[in-house]
Image 1 (cartoon, rainbow, N blue to C red):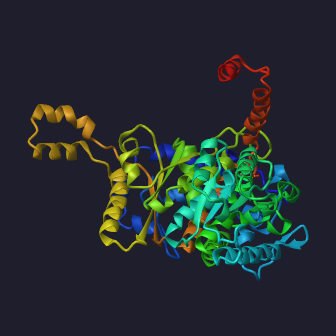
Image 2: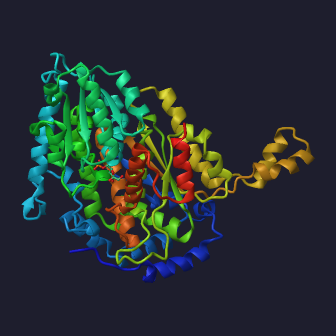
Image 3: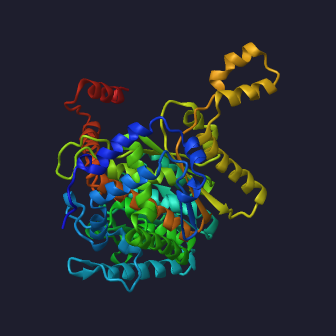
Length: 546
Ligand code: F6P
């Protein structure tokens, strides 16, 4: 059964939220804290080793209650049930969305087309585990009898961003294997990697659900040619494995059938790191840590599926987006992790959120009359503070931001961690409280500045504050907590889609550019310019010119 269809703007909650938004316009978050000493406690939630403080958001009890009412009116509970039960909620592609099955426990039964998919998942997990054992343990050897030292993941989008982000995030847990990720069709990417690789000791994983993606096939072909400069054709099965649902294409490439790890059509690319797409993760941090990552995600799945909305982290986070995006006019959301290990986290989430919820028509195919997906961006703190925080503090845009920090560091260097966390707490405090004209004036008076200069400087020294942030404080960055964190955002994406009445699991918007690139590539290679708008024709001509 498909998801219910309701235009969110027709709900009572939506209408009341619009009214509330007008009434609350003059409110400053700073005042809300003054009015309610229990605000911080009331608007914080604890789950496992996660502590999430929502209190620095522009919300009151009324806002939260109405947002929860909106979730109910949009039948979110029914949508969650259908999602977990494997209904065809990716309707335009006729597919179920079951990445949660990839981290389900073995005793669970999740039926899909009359089959328990959990059995398939565990069969593949065993295959991944034994593959990892033989590669990490140096049992599977390269063509000259040497153990592997380097692993190259060849893939793009969901077949690259997740594994790359996670292996960077879990660098602390990595073993002796060097990991490389080749994604861009720009030759610089692949050739820079090849310069440093030895074909005798390198294993290549071609990751492509479709096995038709131009970038991945282009890079795989270049790498295969490079490999064959030193190795014989029959050595390919030893050095190339694939993760794909297109077995025939992988076989055509020369991969041995036994070395093709399956993918299923009920796993979307951007939600696939939990499947064999995460092979490079399992190789890089060991299979046990890969399991812990899955366990963490599973714990979040259970929390999301079973918790009341008012305690439900992904639900609360998605409701906040709707508040800012649809009522307060925010167009973007920043995600700022305070750990260098998560330096690819925002880039990874960009695909998750923007490919899923960048939609212009509702589930009936009608153009929406309200805003949908937000622009997701961010960089790790403290670097971000010295780059774009000025605009967050004193710019003209409303930018809700998630601050992600860890109580305990992995390196054990207390001095560094105290400094990092001091910044972490200071920034959300500054963003909310700002600095009043009076405070700025007192500060300037203390610095021996002349009265005229004080008056001239005051407008520049004032920070209005009231910039909303959510603080996510986690005990420690472990495979388990990372799994839960990623799953929390995955479910936030799902809830947003339900609330906006859109389909989150297709991505037709990426097709047009791909089609045109195929046409233009033919023109470039045959030196026959085709018919385009004059701008595109002019640019292609410039490219042809000697
Ligand atoms: O860019 C669109 C897309 O289909 C993504 O959704 C996907 O993650 C990526 O391309 C790679 O696709 P594949 O795994 O089939 O090569």
